[in-house]
Length: 540
Image (cartoon, rainbow, N blue to C red; front, top):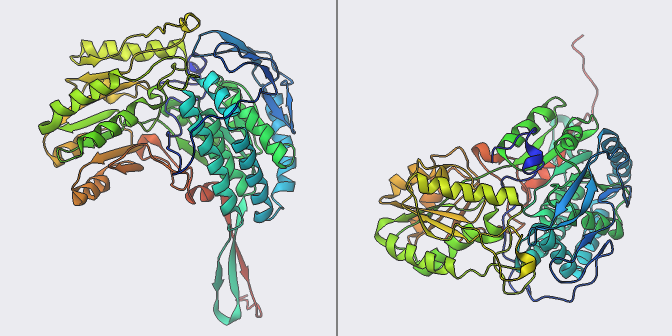
């Protein structure tokens, strides 16, 4: 997305130009029916859009909400659905970051000595509380992010599933025994790293915080989390839930801030690891700063992923997959399949159906049950996405539908950040809309003829986060995903990523993995112990 440390406050404040986490369907049988919403403990609100007012501090340290001790800069937080200011909060300076680290260090000494089963019970209790407060958390996520309440509920479900999953793994984290000659032996210990930092994104604020904190805490670490300043609210609810569930005070702290706050975290001598979700330029800066302290990093960065649709596909499934791959969370998803390659034989039929379905997407108040596309995150981001569409037309692309601002009928939504989802035809590989991550509801359709041709074009990108293929030829399906240079691939579906599966990219889309058993390796370190059972012989 092109943000830097310097221009970050104008864009994502060290948040996501990608996503960091994909939208995922819930497990079978998981209800998406709404529950009654309880009132948030820290705000005055009703269930209606446009009524939330921020009242309490958004930093969280040592088990309580606090104002940063050196918070000299305040920032407004807007409601995307209405464009109104919900309140202001303070950014954290170097002193507050240090206090958060010291608090986390003290909690780490307690938490790291607990058994895996003890940690498991606390994580399970946190998951239970999240399930109990599902509607409340989802409502807050919708208000702060702009996505539909339907999607926000799914995000919350994924969050508690993530905590349950790592609760199950916590008691199974173990080393290895190695027999040596003469009765001697060695063993390995998988140990916690210490204080970990998570820097999150604005498109999945609560979910990404769970993706990072669940494996970190399961391994015995403490975590300091910095959310995007565009969505600073819901992660504090997670901090309170962890405290209620029984973690030591200080084990999960929240610091609010922008680029400078992120820099203080990355360069702090007592931070052992940094996990970042965001843009490539900011990811590079995270690496540079962390390298000075030889800190391991996990980077989940941007994407411009290919979705390949062969002529033998089931057309309805392919259309559904393309819609899921482009328009969830207003298109603000890093692993979206925004380059839709369609085999020429079905190009006309596919395009006609995609346009028809896209035009039917219900846009509007994200807290209404039938809304399927809410507001984009901010006015500058909306204008940026619309600018990509203008540039695409100038370069020869054809707008088949959408691509313009949308003003809902409800007067209170007139200043919200809405647009009609866009489908672009007559696209070429050299167009900006095809090469760069737009991070909005914009689908680019590109025709292709042969498998060999489309694979070469699909891989002709600096990104490598995801990719997908639709075909009824099972041999071709596996052949294509094996050839795709991407960390996450889908066959006959898209954006389906249960917490059991590792998530991460190739090339400039980052390295390291979130979710799955693989994440345990990135939140722990291996110690080797050699045990001599005989006498020591010396050559001296």
